[in-house]
Image (cartoon, one colour):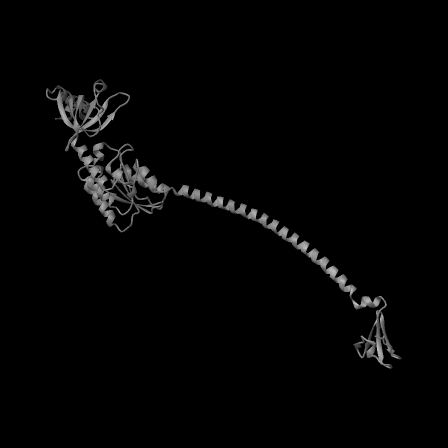
Length: 382
């Protein structure tokens, strides 16, 4: 075919759509499978979903004119038979089922297996709150299990470096969907267990996707391997509304990979700001205490000085009185009143009996001394 005979993509899709819709068998067919990624568009009333089995899936839509006739609300995991015609969505080039009826058959095989796995894990206590470990407050090394390409690892690295430029991120690159994903993630967990670099925290991360894309995180062996990690782990797979068995077993569940990074790494800027505020508050408290104690000490010193002053005055008055009393008893004071005392040979004469005529005496007055000779001794009769 020459280039002049080429047709546009639109023309091709339109042609294939016509083939599908005009096919006798495909114009009305019953498809059996399990519902997945069921989404009700609130404004239009249309229901978008997938019909899946063990090996394949196909997109489907049921428009409002048919959804109003349903007697039950379609949910993920239901086993159903869908009455539909096969068509093609021109804009995306995907073929899909245009459903006009859905009949519930029971619980799908995949959902049944999920429920059984959940029961086994719960019975072994892997979902118990008591076994969940506390995340490190300030990890220095974090292992991340995710794809090496795409926005997830870049988002985690950007958030971590912004909050703490010193934290080290160890990437364990894996497939996050497809047939090899479970084994790749399980091997990464084992590698972390052997790694001697000593991660303090592990993050399982994957961006949004369909229920089929995220189904690998319901694998029982993967969940059990994650629970064997020697350090806490965060599950951050899918959107906020998506829950997997890994989420239930995780020490912490984050709605998005970026949220996991924010949970894992403290904001050093806020920490430093908080620390500065605490130091400032302590400084102000100490200043207040010093001022308060200084005033208390000043008041106490004033009281002590006042007490000392009163004590000194009291003692000074006591001394003055003692001096007055001593002065009144002083020999000189007595002599000033006209008395004198007599000595003989340097010794006080206390009695006339000790004198004899002719003795030389010294008589001391308040203002001088006289030397005398005894002419006669007279004693008082007893």
